[in-house]
Image (cartoon, rainbow, N blue to C red; front, side, top):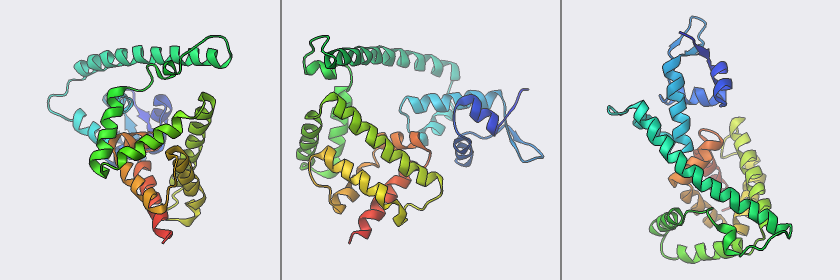
Length: 256
Protein backbone atom coordinates (compact mmCIF):
# COMPACT_ATOMS: atom_id res chain seq x y z
CA UNK A 1 0.00 0.00 0.00
CA UNK A 2 1.40 3.39 -1.00
CA UNK A 3 1.52 5.77 1.94
CA UNK A 4 2.29 9.44 2.45
CA UNK A 5 3.75 11.36 5.38
CA UNK A 6 2.03 14.54 6.58
CA UNK A 7 4.37 16.74 4.54
CA UNK A 8 3.91 14.63 1.42
CA UNK A 9 0.13 14.61 1.72
CA UNK A 10 0.00 18.33 2.45
CA UNK A 11 2.01 19.00 -0.71
CA UNK A 12 -0.12 16.57 -2.72
CA UNK A 13 -3.48 18.02 -1.58
CA UNK A 14 -2.43 21.67 -1.51
CA UNK A 15 -3.13 22.18 2.20
CA UNK A 16 -0.86 23.06 5.10
CA UNK A 17 0.73 20.58 7.49
CA UNK A 18 -0.96 22.53 10.26
CA UNK A 19 -4.33 21.83 8.66
CA UNK A 20 -3.70 18.07 8.59
CA UNK A 21 -2.56 18.16 12.22
CA UNK A 22 -5.75 20.03 13.11
CA UNK A 23 -7.91 17.47 11.30
CA UNK A 24 -6.14 14.72 13.26
CA UNK A 25 -6.58 16.56 16.57
CA UNK A 26 -10.34 16.96 16.08
CA UNK A 27 -10.79 13.39 14.82
CA UNK A 28 -11.75 14.42 11.30
CA UNK A 29 -8.85 12.71 9.51
CA UNK A 30 -6.76 10.18 11.38
CA UNK A 31 -3.63 8.66 9.77
CA UNK A 32 -3.68 5.03 8.73
CA UNK A 33 -0.94 4.40 11.27
CA UNK A 34 1.92 6.06 13.12
CA UNK A 35 5.38 4.64 12.47
CA UNK A 36 8.10 3.84 14.96
CA UNK A 37 9.60 7.21 14.02
CA UNK A 38 6.30 8.81 15.21
CA UNK A 39 5.52 10.00 11.69
CA UNK A 40 1.89 9.89 10.60
CA UNK A 41 1.25 7.85 7.45
CA UNK A 42 -1.80 8.14 5.19
CA UNK A 43 -3.06 5.55 2.71
CA UNK A 44 -5.75 5.26 0.02
CA UNK A 45 -8.70 5.44 2.43
CA UNK A 46 -7.33 8.57 4.08
CA UNK A 47 -6.64 10.21 0.71
CA UNK A 48 -10.25 9.64 -0.36
CA UNK A 49 -11.56 10.91 2.97
CA UNK A 50 -9.43 14.05 2.70
CA UNK A 51 -10.82 14.64 -0.78
CA UNK A 52 -14.33 14.51 0.68
CA UNK A 53 -13.37 16.89 3.48
CA UNK A 54 -12.02 19.42 1.00
CA UNK A 55 -14.98 19.06 -1.35
CA UNK A 56 -17.43 19.58 1.51
CA UNK A 57 -15.52 22.66 2.59
CA UNK A 58 -15.71 24.08 -0.92
CA UNK A 59 -19.44 23.37 -0.91
CA UNK A 60 -19.87 25.59 2.18
CA UNK A 61 -20.34 22.77 4.69
CA UNK A 62 -19.10 23.88 8.16
CA UNK A 63 -16.04 21.95 9.29
CA UNK A 64 -17.84 20.86 12.47
CA UNK A 65 -20.51 19.09 10.37
CA UNK A 66 -18.22 17.30 7.92
CA UNK A 67 -17.14 14.55 10.30
CA UNK A 68 -20.75 13.69 11.13
CA UNK A 69 -21.57 13.47 7.42
CA UNK A 70 -18.62 11.24 6.56
CA UNK A 71 -19.14 8.98 9.58
CA UNK A 72 -22.90 8.59 9.19
CA UNK A 73 -23.96 4.92 8.86
CA UNK A 74 -25.61 5.50 5.49
CA UNK A 75 -22.73 7.43 3.92
CA UNK A 76 -21.88 6.14 0.46
CA UNK A 77 -18.84 7.71 -1.17
CA UNK A 78 -19.80 6.95 -4.77
CA UNK A 79 -23.34 8.29 -4.39
CA UNK A 80 -21.99 11.38 -2.64
CA UNK A 81 -19.49 12.03 -5.41
CA UNK A 82 -22.25 11.85 -8.03
CA UNK A 83 -24.40 14.29 -6.05
CA UNK A 84 -21.46 16.63 -5.60
CA UNK A 85 -20.78 16.53 -9.31
CA UNK A 86 -24.37 17.60 -10.04
CA UNK A 87 -24.15 20.43 -7.52
CA UNK A 88 -20.83 21.61 -8.95
CA UNK A 89 -22.27 21.56 -12.47
CA UNK A 90 -25.01 23.92 -11.27
CA UNK A 91 -22.42 26.16 -9.65
CA UNK A 92 -20.27 26.04 -12.77
CA UNK A 93 -23.17 27.40 -14.80
CA UNK A 94 -23.64 30.18 -12.25
CA UNK A 95 -19.93 31.00 -12.21
CA UNK A 96 -19.93 31.10 -16.01
CA UNK A 97 -22.61 33.77 -15.74
CA UNK A 98 -20.47 35.68 -13.25
CA UNK A 99 -17.51 35.54 -15.64
CA UNK A 100 -19.67 36.99 -18.40
CA UNK A 101 -20.75 39.79 -16.06
CA UNK A 102 -17.13 40.54 -15.13
CA UNK A 103 -16.08 40.60 -18.79
CA UNK A 104 -18.90 43.00 -19.63
CA UNK A 105 -17.97 45.21 -16.67
CA UNK A 106 -14.34 45.39 -17.84
CA UNK A 107 -15.58 46.36 -21.30
CA UNK A 108 -17.85 49.00 -19.75
CA UNK A 109 -15.00 50.53 -17.72
CA UNK A 110 -12.85 50.63 -20.86
CA UNK A 111 -15.68 52.33 -22.75
CA UNK A 112 -16.08 49.46 -25.19
CA UNK A 113 -19.75 48.64 -24.54
CA UNK A 114 -22.92 49.85 -22.84
CA UNK A 115 -24.12 48.06 -19.71
CA UNK A 116 -26.99 48.92 -17.40
CA UNK A 117 -26.24 49.46 -13.71
CA UNK A 118 -28.49 46.52 -12.82
CA UNK A 119 -26.44 44.25 -15.09
CA UNK A 120 -23.37 44.90 -12.94
CA UNK A 121 -24.77 42.40 -10.44
CA UNK A 122 -26.20 39.84 -12.81
CA UNK A 123 -25.53 36.33 -11.54
CA UNK A 124 -23.28 37.41 -8.67
CA UNK A 125 -25.41 37.34 -5.53
CA UNK A 126 -28.07 34.72 -5.00
CA UNK A 127 -31.25 36.58 -3.95
CA UNK A 128 -32.32 33.58 -1.88
CA UNK A 129 -29.01 33.51 0.00
CA UNK A 130 -29.07 37.24 0.64
CA UNK A 131 -32.65 37.08 1.92
CA UNK A 132 -31.81 34.13 4.17
CA UNK A 133 -28.80 35.90 5.64
CA UNK A 134 -30.65 39.16 6.30
CA UNK A 135 -33.53 37.28 7.94
CA UNK A 136 -31.02 35.57 10.25
CA UNK A 137 -29.59 38.96 11.28
CA UNK A 138 -33.01 40.44 12.00
CA UNK A 139 -34.05 37.36 13.98
CA UNK A 140 -30.95 37.45 16.17
CA UNK A 141 -30.38 41.21 16.51
CA UNK A 142 -33.79 42.85 16.23
CA UNK A 143 -35.81 44.81 13.70
CA UNK A 144 -33.49 47.85 13.87
CA UNK A 145 -31.00 45.67 11.98
CA UNK A 146 -33.05 46.34 8.84
CA UNK A 147 -32.05 50.03 8.97
CA UNK A 148 -28.38 49.13 9.46
CA UNK A 149 -28.50 46.73 6.51
CA UNK A 150 -30.05 49.44 4.34
CA UNK A 151 -27.28 51.89 5.31
CA UNK A 152 -24.63 49.31 4.53
CA UNK A 153 -26.12 48.55 1.13
CA UNK A 154 -26.31 52.27 0.33
CA UNK A 155 -22.64 52.78 1.27
CA UNK A 156 -21.50 49.89 -0.91
CA UNK A 157 -23.83 50.78 -3.80
CA UNK A 158 -22.19 54.19 -4.05
CA UNK A 159 -18.80 52.64 -4.81
CA UNK A 160 -17.56 52.34 -8.37
CA UNK A 161 -16.50 48.82 -9.44
CA UNK A 162 -12.81 49.70 -9.13
CA UNK A 163 -13.40 51.18 -5.68
CA UNK A 164 -15.26 48.05 -4.59
CA UNK A 165 -12.34 45.88 -5.74
CA UNK A 166 -9.96 48.03 -3.70
CA UNK A 167 -12.16 47.83 -0.62
CA UNK A 168 -12.31 44.04 -0.78
CA UNK A 169 -8.57 43.77 -1.40
CA UNK A 170 -7.95 45.84 1.74
CA UNK A 171 -10.20 43.52 3.75
CA UNK A 172 -8.25 40.49 2.57
CA UNK A 173 -5.00 42.17 3.65
CA UNK A 174 -6.40 42.91 7.11
CA UNK A 175 -7.75 39.39 7.58
CA UNK A 176 -4.49 37.81 6.43
CA UNK A 177 -2.51 39.98 8.85
CA UNK A 178 -4.75 38.91 11.74
CA UNK A 179 -4.51 35.27 10.65
CA UNK A 180 -0.73 35.58 10.67
CA UNK A 181 -0.91 36.63 14.32
CA UNK A 182 -2.92 33.48 14.97
CA UNK A 183 -0.38 31.32 13.15
CA UNK A 184 2.42 32.80 15.23
CA UNK A 185 0.64 31.91 18.46
CA UNK A 186 -0.18 35.48 19.48
CA UNK A 187 -3.05 35.41 22.03
CA UNK A 188 -6.27 37.02 20.74
CA UNK A 189 -6.26 39.27 23.85
CA UNK A 190 -2.80 40.68 22.98
CA UNK A 191 -2.65 44.45 22.68
CA UNK A 192 -0.10 43.94 19.89
CA UNK A 193 -3.06 43.05 17.65
CA UNK A 194 -4.66 46.47 18.20
CA UNK A 195 -3.35 48.14 15.01
CA UNK A 196 -4.86 45.43 12.82
CA UNK A 197 -8.05 45.18 14.87
CA UNK A 198 -8.52 48.96 14.67
CA UNK A 199 -7.88 48.87 10.96
CA UNK A 200 -10.52 46.14 10.68
CA UNK A 201 -12.98 48.22 12.72
CA UNK A 202 -12.34 51.25 10.48
CA UNK A 203 -13.02 49.08 7.42
CA UNK A 204 -16.30 47.90 8.98
CA UNK A 205 -17.36 51.50 9.69
CA UNK A 206 -16.76 52.48 6.07
CA UNK A 207 -18.73 49.47 4.81
CA UNK A 208 -21.59 50.32 7.19
CA UNK A 209 -21.63 53.98 6.21
CA UNK A 210 -21.69 54.94 9.91
CA UNK A 211 -19.57 54.86 13.05
CA UNK A 212 -18.58 51.54 14.62
CA UNK A 213 -18.11 52.17 18.36
CA UNK A 214 -16.68 49.40 20.60
CA UNK A 215 -20.16 48.16 21.59
CA UNK A 216 -21.18 47.78 17.95
CA UNK A 217 -17.87 46.12 17.08
CA UNK A 218 -18.36 43.61 19.89
CA UNK A 219 -21.86 42.98 18.52
CA UNK A 220 -20.35 42.31 15.10
CA UNK A 221 -18.32 39.54 16.73
CA UNK A 222 -21.67 37.93 17.61
CA UNK A 223 -22.67 38.17 13.95
CA UNK A 224 -19.47 36.37 13.02
CA UNK A 225 -20.81 33.33 14.88
CA UNK A 226 -23.09 32.76 11.86
CA UNK A 227 -22.09 29.53 10.05
CA UNK A 228 -21.39 31.39 6.80
CA UNK A 229 -18.90 33.70 8.48
CA UNK A 230 -17.32 30.83 10.39
CA UNK A 231 -16.88 28.91 7.15
CA UNK A 232 -15.23 31.90 5.51
CA UNK A 233 -12.73 32.43 8.33
CA UNK A 234 -12.01 28.74 8.80
CA UNK A 235 -11.06 28.63 5.11
CA UNK A 236 -8.35 31.21 5.84
CA UNK A 237 -6.93 29.06 8.64
CA UNK A 238 -8.53 26.34 10.80
CA UNK A 239 -9.31 27.86 14.19
CA UNK A 240 -9.19 31.45 12.89
CA UNK A 241 -12.95 32.02 13.26
CA UNK A 242 -12.87 31.69 17.06
CA UNK A 243 -9.60 33.61 17.22
CA UNK A 244 -10.96 36.61 15.31
CA UNK A 245 -14.15 36.75 17.38
CA UNK A 246 -12.14 36.60 20.62
CA UNK A 247 -9.74 39.31 19.42
CA UNK A 248 -12.62 41.64 18.49
CA UNK A 249 -14.33 41.19 21.85
CA UNK A 250 -11.05 41.60 23.75
CA UNK A 251 -10.32 44.87 21.94
CA UNK A 252 -13.81 46.19 22.68
CA UNK A 253 -13.44 45.38 26.41
CA UNK A 254 -10.13 47.28 26.58
CA UNK A 255 -11.82 50.46 25.37
CA UNK A 256 -13.83 50.83 28.62
